[in-house]
Length: 434
Image (tube, rainbow, N blue to C red; front, top):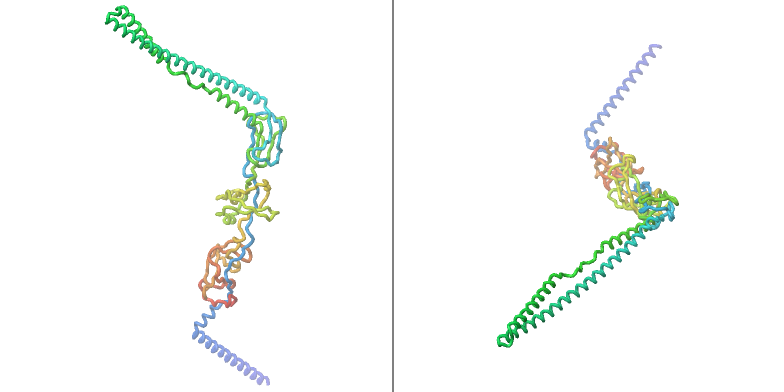
């Protein structure tokens, strides 16, 4: 009985083993058949391996975010010290600290008895110089008239003497003629000749005197004394006028360190005026923000509590980073006719406008980083091209692309990590998944 069971068990094991062998043989045969199929269709096998699941998206321009802004502070464009031009006692303080003053307005009035006395002296000196000049001119006119009279008298005397000489010459000729005819004596001839020679000598002497008279002293009376007196009076008037200390520019009187009764010396400080039209707006730009400003001539700015924007001219943009702020200093010059902007106010500079925020941007999930370099895959037909890209501003889930791709290209946004450069893929229908 036991032997019969053992024989049956052995038979069962033998049948199982045979069945297993048959099964294994069938599997091997089937595997070989499939291998033959693969070897017979290598292209079909390669195409199946290349068919990877990807998704593409058309690259387009998108708004990367709101316009870039930067905090800044309002400052006076110029700070000018106000000094007393003349010394004196403070008589009246017209303006107070914090007042907005216009150019030429009186800030402080001084009093100086010394300057008043100097003006009186200058006025007297001017009067004296004027009188001296007038007196000199009168004397000069009188001398000229006297000279003219002397010249006239000399001319008349010469004319008369010339006539006398002519008459004597005729008389002498007659006497000689009479002498030749026995009608005159030799003495008469001698007397006639003597009279003629004496008259001729007198005429010659007068003519010599006429030549030695020379021109009249008509040189102008010097007015140097009068000019000096006029300058002295003008200086005295200016000194008195400078006792009114006036604003050299329009702006805010931020310092006024004086009191009534004080005596100020010439050149003493009276106050400080900060020019507020235009104002200076000063800020510091981070390195990334500075590149959006370079090349521009003006920027918009606004008060944080107001939506009204104004324009300011870029008067300075540093080319070297400020070592303390670790940023580039920027200055705007903005008109401020109503003095609404005061030093110390905070404003916001708008570095970009709405149009500058519309840029070529791609999903951040499509970007592949290898070290410090960024890549994306772009579909060109059925080839996945690997492109190196330069990235700009980030605003999840998109990021600006500065170079490497362009608007309208098909970007691989899913499955790009499994691709190799220039790998052939089957483009997804309608830009969808495959």
